[in-house]
Length: 234
Image 1: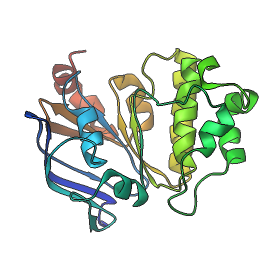
Image 2 (image 1 turned 120 degrees about the horizontal axis):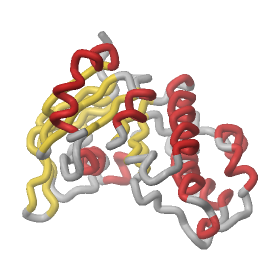
Image 3 (image 1 turned 90 degrees about the vertical axis):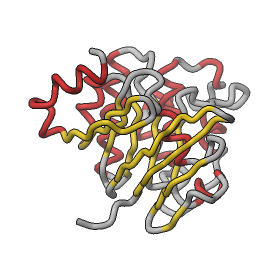
């Protein structure tokens, strides 16, 4: 098998004196959609933030496309081709939809154009001139994802994209993730909604107390449900 696009080994991370990740190791291959599952506080978001260099001190190894990034600043990690869509979305309220989309710089060729993003998210096209404050939660999530698609990044880190959204919008986000996979994007997805995760992902890493406790492929789900229910508390 080809080398992983992202190879994380023994990742430790701290927020100040708080030690939040304890030796996380995972592989993401090009074109995969992989989820991090776990209860609140399991270390899922901290893993995404550590990959982007947004925690405090880090140790271990994070190799992206064959290059070690553990010592790089966050802006250089982003420019290497990794994009992060945080749970809080970070929409600029004073800018309209199109202005929000145009804000991030392109870091590589191959990013989607604004027209392509509007084809992917027709709701946004209808709201192109609406300020961020006027968007629904689902529209804000679409905008947050659309904004990173312009950058040319090929590895997308998505934190809880289904959180707090109506079922019909969750289905639309799921269709979008599958469409991005078909276009060659690679996605590492943090989710608490396991039913949603299993509709979009190839594999699942289960986290607890800042560690990876299990790896499950979709083909193994039927025989792994008891173990997953124990970890996820569902």
